[in-house]
Length: 279
Image 1: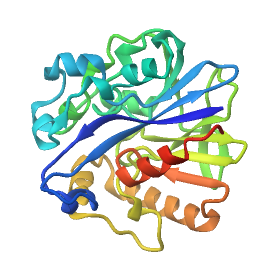
Image 2: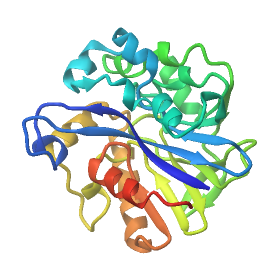
Image 3: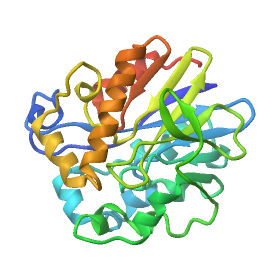
Image 4: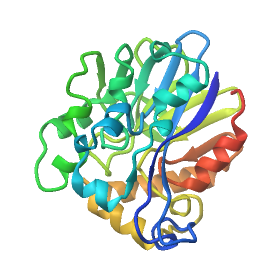
């Protein structure tokens, strides 16, 4: 198994370090951390897609509110499609896509890989298909995924993994790739766990946004990200409970046999990209 860490989108909201904790200018820099996994038996597996080709060509697929608030940088070169081609692969080589959830910045590239099977917790599709309130119609953009036919939906029940009770291995995927329910940000939000010869990786999606939230004895988060996460919470109490569980998991296991990272922390993306080794 070889894992490529890709940035499949960039958002630059106002606030600089007050938003992301790192930037020195007036704007923050928030990536969309996706994974491309080269497997020996299952072809390519893509974890999240970031923004896709059709989002770049037709920005109206995205909510105007989030385009402006997040100052989304629509760059074709950042799409998973372009990056996979630059690595020497074709879209048809992507056999499976595993989604942490269906937010606009995680599922926009589904159209670019029409032959791939898409794996998702069933609760997520239920929430995205029955939107209510003000935020949900703007975060879940049906045009990004409604034409897909080849889905695999999973219930939040299964095996045990590092103290998490409900984990499902992927159907027809022989590698150790697991869906780990981490609800709160959305009802069907999941982390994606990868078993490698050096230990486990957990892509925690949007269970947290900033490294300090779970990598330390006490939670810290820049003001901008804290407010943004609260606005996007489907269940704030449950998200905070799962953050605490992740923090306890990391403190118990360190980085020796378990690496945890999220979707939107630029420091974590840079660290993972530097490692970028065959796993």
